[in-house]
Image 1 (cartoon, rainbow, N blue to C red):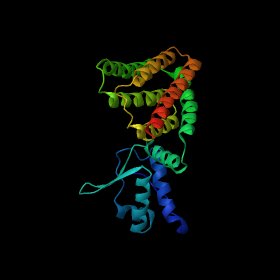
Image 2: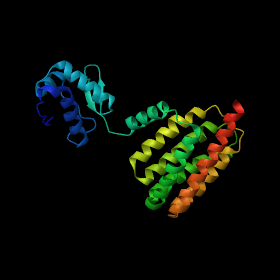
Image 3: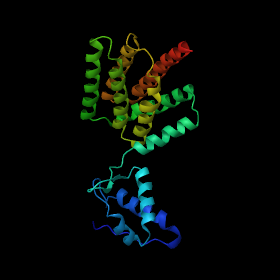
Length: 243
């Protein structure tokens, strides 16, 4: 590995080690799959203690920038930077702030309306093809009748996240993954297999995908907001019935 690191100032050794390795990962000098030098070599490169290096590597692992593997071929390996850490942090923030059901609905309506509008402006043919493939999978399951509600909910999540990916902003993707994969999953106890709600939901999604395909940004935003509001109204009625 030919990456060069600067020597730290005496009073900032720990932060310096983290910052130097992080910068090398983020600017591409260190790529996913690259293995960092052994701890003893890093100790010499940074002119610091082995304990400082180990602590810095633990912080980098917590940030999702490296994996620390054990065994003969172990060591610190650079990870592909993704939205996982952002998603987890946002999820903790939502839980700590005790966000209410109605606040979540308000948030989703605003964000998913914006995302759908951007997707309509930016969608490419391959994006539409992917969305239509997901819809085709949902249609097959719906035609088979009851018993597939869990799979259908998984497809619904994939559709929402795929639309965010079409919009082209990774922050939207991270936020919607957090909402759909973590918060909404808490409603898993709803008995949906004999309900019309999933049929209605995918009818809404079909209309939304057509608006995105036709480049109708305003219409796509309105349909997304309507879909979110209607689905949350169903969840809210079900929640009250469980009390």
